[in-house]
Amino acid sequence: MGSLLHTEVRWLSRGKTLTRLFEMKPEVRIFLIDDFALGDRLCDERWLMKLAYLADIFKKLNDLSLSLQGKVVTVFEASDKVQAFKKKIKFWAESMKNRILDSFPMVKNSQKN
Image (tube, rainbow, N blue to C red; front, side, top):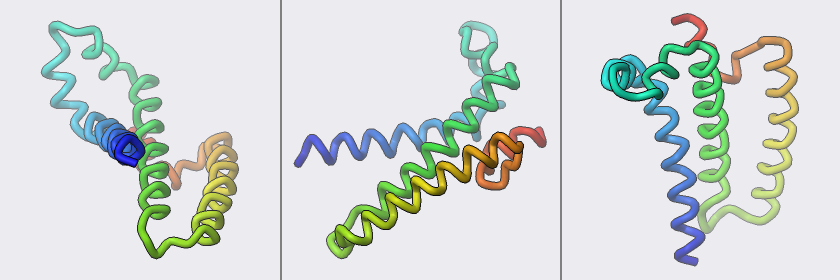
């Protein structure tokens, strides 16, 4: 049980780390620009778009994970949430193909900058 909890905490913190990296990209870019290859990545719009996408996806996965936890969540509710999430994935994939970014706020905001 302890191992499972540790895995869940690591999963959540990775998603939050991606979000924070994306939010702090100007500061991180300044810090890394002179000495590290990652500094170059933070100037690459395509790479930043991928980072924003990953941050959005991990946020959605984190939200799902949190909604499945707790003593009051039944197996039926959890199953419904997972099934709904699978449908959302199909919707999000179609939205991305059509460049409709409303479901991806970080990606949408990255295009404005």
